[in-house]
Length: 292
Length: 168
Image 1 (tube, rainbow over the protein chains, first blue to last red):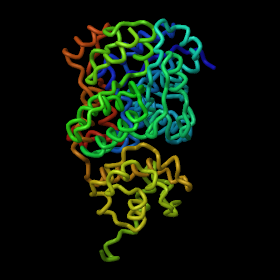
Image 2 (tube, helix red, strand yellow):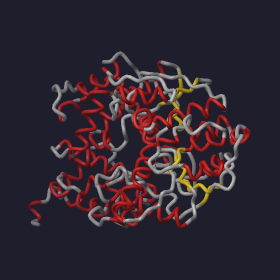
Image 3 (cartoon, one colour):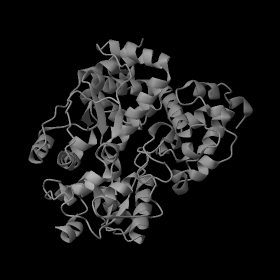
Image 4 (cartoon, each protein chain N blue to C red):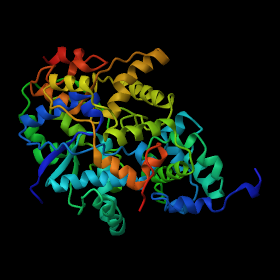
């Protein structure tokens, strides 16, 4: 395999809306000595729902530009958002599968002085953690284990599916997040809506709120102390979404929603401010009180 | 509805869109609809029904509908389809065709404008950069000329009221 350095691909939501996720990734991966090379030429991936629904080849052209930027900079890409993972992984799959399509896209890239050969590897950070760092080294980095904290994992859709393209884990019986959560000392718990979609891609005011409600009814019944996830879009559905569920259905869950690297960061001993845990709508204090 | 109002070419237009190629493989088993979490909440979205409507040639009823935009792209149907119709991709292809025929939802248009003008879905202003530097993160810029050029050359600009697309 190549020995390329890893460039984080932050996408749109994380740097603008949830800098706490970016901070937690930089800090927890820094503790694990995963060197990251920042590239400032990346743009929106672009998103696999809105932009792709508008025109697939235009979507592919913008995605191919991002892949070509990484290739020019001689880095592999590490995504932190399931949407970015979906777009960049699918784009690299389509361009590898269809030579004619690749040439058509390259004719467009040529007009901005670029070309994509097809060598950029795209991985979500949980794959980097599992495959490059390994669960044992993560466990060794923990100084404040999250003992007795029950974490309901939310996988979201685009990390795992379409399985034909993603190959991150078994799409029906995934366990990558369970292993990573266990490494922090916390206990992953199963619940009936573990693999349900957050609903954010649905152009409706009503349907996503109902899906959020179903998921929180499920994790609350399972006795979760918090939800652990790896996608900023799902996070927005659930952090702000719980407040909307409370308003609409008069059902208060108040279950904190925590990005995986924030969980890991707590276990590695970083402070609340260092991990931006004070920026959440649903307060994380109940968890922090038990470990800090 | 009269049979003369059906458009037998509609299904071929869909199969020509990237992602729509596998449409004809559908044998209407309904696994997609049974798997769909959106359908469980709102009966207006029904993938099997949409596929039948496309095969029958109900062009206007499908392309001008609100329901095609309800797909959340969760891939539950695509993973389970025994005929490998790749339904999530098919829904995307149907939306691409709807956009070509003038049906672009306002929310979609707004997002495209943001990406065109800034290369991002969210503007990073002074306030965001302050928030970022407080968290110990580097400042970011909000513009990208390459994306604007790609928008112009691929014709993406036209639908959001920008310059005329050059095409190829």
